Image 1 (cartoon, rainbow over the protein chains, first blue to last red):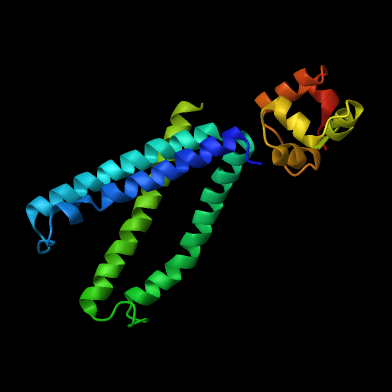
Image 2: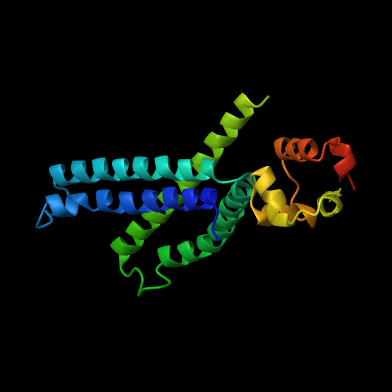
Length: 143
Length: 63
């Protein structure tokens, strides 16, 4: 039997996901057929929808986290921290291999490997930036 | 960290689910604390102490 708190936690998490996905794909519905790459209107609406989807998902994800008990919160923090770090460690050599053109069926040609390197590098840089920002916030507020 | 949660619970004939309900946590949390796999936060430790009407150090023991 699922208790009410767990049910509320799952409900918020489901709303986060189910609500964010249609918002993300809204530009594909508004602009049909999809305009060519670089279209200013499409780019602006896509970025706005992505920001709205993330705001929606974040709001309900935080609500879900706050609803859950401390044991579940600790499990989530542990899994996000160590799971993410493990994922990064595993991804870096694969990222280098693909970026160097070592797996041509994933990204073949100079442009494709360059785009892949840029995308993967951006994700890693954003994660590092987030880590340092949170670390600085912690130091500033907890001493 | 060792604790006497299981003993205190047994003295009152409470199941893990009963204790979980009284502490507003899940049965899994109670089980994890009892088996020493998870150390509760200070607020939860205080709630446990209040529920059993005992000081924290009478329930939890630093190894």
